[in-house]
Image 1 (tube, rainbow, N blue to C red):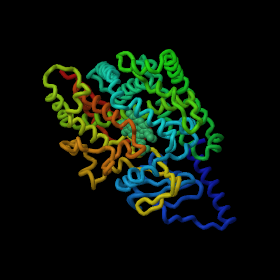
Image 2: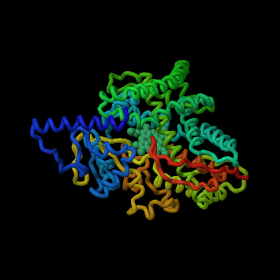
Image 3: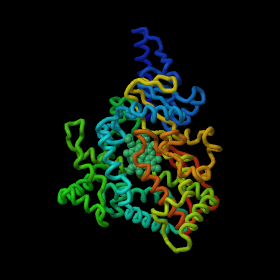
Image 4: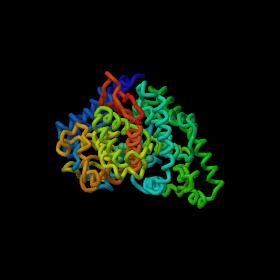
Length: 516
Ligand code: HEM
């Protein structure tokens, strides 16, 4: 059944049920003046606009609603209210000042229940001991600066792969940059996750099973509306969804088991001791085997839950970073003077030493490069919203009531483009971060939010420092090794398209010329 037919079918049923209830119980329209304002909603099914517009148009609809109703609006998609906040001060009040109340996640919808192993992942777990355990494990075991340093060989290896692939494309042929960036990020994150430099076929296979799920996730979202009916009327789509999940398990489980075997053959202490030797690094999956779930009788993670956590690690760190990298490189192609400034800054740092590579220790001495990365994240945040939050108790926000269990989300892109904070916000202008501002700019928003590409507060992206390192390292080296030029007669189009992240509608095609 087509989505639109399915939704109309649901609408008719809802209207009939609502009319019946009204006549039986004589209920007048519920009208909740204390919630943030929003459009009138059809009982049970929610706002009619979602039946006429695809969810991908959510952002522009919300922009119109904010212009009409103010900094916070309520819509209903399904039964519960969803509150969208566009104002950075309200976001600060919620996520920083009342951080603990706003830090939970809503119950998983049916498809995330499967892909997220019933909320046994960091991003989906409700605020509580399980979430704390999983998040602390990632931040202290893998994202701690000393551990991140131990992956520097892997970054170097990835850079070589990326450069070779770009060279193979040759300067005569335009390169499709995003394909190369995605593959490179997969190489790196797969290494951090499984601890092995896998061969090209294995990496491509992992990339395939991960991406096919991500690219279809919006189609699969239709299954979340009245799932029982969805399973009957959209049964082919359900089967396809389950098949893709099974494929992920088929590809990842052998890698998880191989690592478990390895671990069983070496005692824990030795793994840790070996972790600074060249040929051995602690991988994310190694850290999962001994975890004990505090809310479930200290049981260990199941294999399916480990697949979920590896999926989360791979997807959170690859698509987001590759998307940001593409946007930044697109702007460097569009504005050659900015690209030139990035190059000149590196040249003045390492001179004409003939060094083929910008090293990680150079990055802290390249403030303009940092400014370019920050400006890229401000102007083109990979996610235009954070993941849905929910409140654990009824709370007031900006004079409005946020009922317990309401969904709350924040308009990340709008905040980074707020003309009251950013002069000429749609321009790509790294200069706004240059000087003291680069070093003092607080991306965690702890005192004040000016932009929040990684979210802020307790649920802020735990990988933000790693992501910034990857972006600076790859942008620096891509510009150091190649001159990036627009394809003649084919300008750079900065239109957006929402996929898993918000990507370039017309992906960057550029000509790359090796320097010197
Ligand atoms: C440019 C790259 C990245 C961007 C823009 C980004 C952005 C975000 C955003 C907006 C959130 C949601 C925050 C919220 O709900 O309030 C998030 C959550 C998360 N990110 Fe990232 N991220 C990036 C890279 C990474 C990397 C490299 C990793 C790890 C390898 C990572 C792991 C996670 C995890 C586990 C969560 C869930 C946190 C939680 O719910 O407690 N991300 N990220």
